[in-house]
Image 1 (cartoon, rainbow, N blue to C red):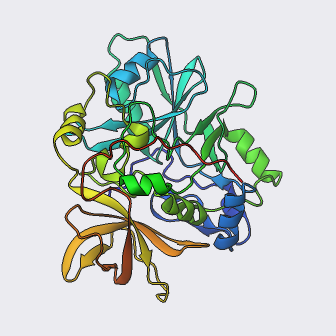
Image 2 (image 1 turned 120 degrees about the vertical axis):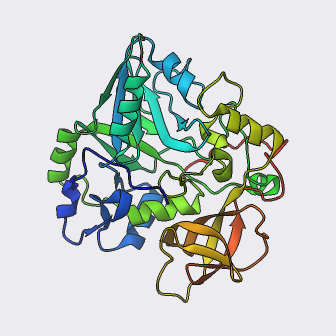
Length: 369
């Protein structure tokens, strides 16, 4: 597991934790509500599009200046130099060895680029970017204390009229991206996921909470359950200090393979062109007779041999107990596993048999019902 990110908002507590029945979340999501007494109903409301989720502990970084997009383009995995206003995209900031350091949710409003990222990530990202700005016309500001993030199951961009929003591109294959899901699974249909993050001034968020607008909000339990079912990776859960994007099928939304040099590019290109990722993401269907879910980081065993770890476990309102896990690529796909002491069957996400999938039609997001 990744170490918790340091944060200038380490003592943050969402005003929604004052709601009756609110159960606090732990770990990276500390400061938010895990659920409000009925996580199954919260999942169903989210899936139906009638609820929102509190993500107000996420970091927010604003970058202004005429050089901002070409500058970010040069450092990250995504093609950003021509990013149109109110068009969302995802990029990764990698270590020099190609390991995931930050997952950046980006949208530009024509004047500034806005980035949301995991709780605690904003101070680290801001410090790094300021070291890299040299003589360029950019200004980087950590605005986490002034802006809150709200999640909602909507498939639309923000606008100048509506306000800022980052639309999650998952599971579409972005221009320049690549698939690591097995071809037959992709053709059959990737699990649906429609999601966006809305940015609002923190004072306005607190006012709207006080007025009761978020009385039907969903907690992190519900969000994680739907995210696991959609195979959507998250930094700090599915990642550790060795993670490369190929292992999580992250090249589909966050990596552009036909752009210039950036930090960590050699690893991206080498694995994509010459090799296979050493590990692979799977979804596990867990034995429903067990009362406890495996903890994040729990070992996954094939017989007596440890072959991976649980990254996120959840109870889904239809699928039951499920989990995402990262396994050694050599783990047989048809064996029963033991995940944190719970029997588990694999649903393949990243293909164990080959490198990137070829000749697979690009995904199109399914319309919301």
